[in-house]
Image (cartoon, rainbow, N blue to C red; front, side, top):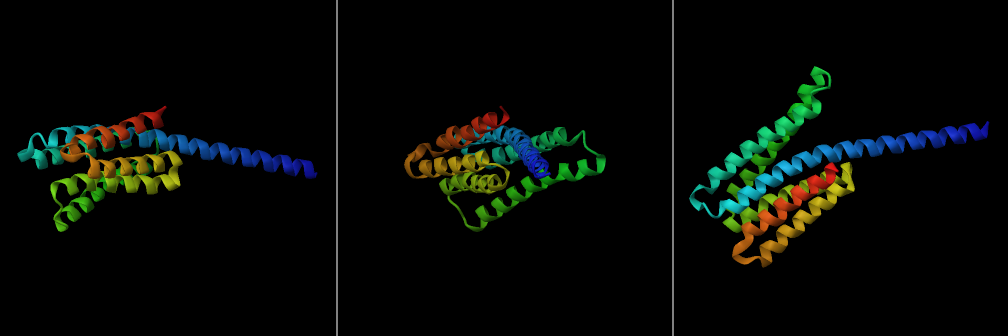
Length: 185
């Protein structure tokens, strides 16, 4: 009788471990799609933003609009097979999250009167901190990715000189793209 209980307990622990790992893999795949999308947008924005200085704000608002639409498409693809009532809620959650993130960050960049360099550093560090916190629950790889983007951004802030925006395009945007590809593997 004791052997059967021990075997059953071991089987249940194995099933729980498999379920946890499956959930983590699915989360990584979805997060990878978002990271690739926003990484590409960061590369474009930071690479060209300082080259077209009078139109930088318009460029970033356009890229944010593309990012919100892309986030909607990625989310729609992920939830389209679920029940209709679940799909609407699951579709809105990431979109509302992105809009709140952009709104919150924009409010603080206006209130704090950041200079150009500080504003360029704010967005990647803000998103990296959120990615790190999300990774504490969803998986260590996401937390590590957030920490890496934060560290690369701060290194560039202090040591990249006038090339800071290009540094961000290559490191922060590039780290999101490579991290997203790695998570999708």
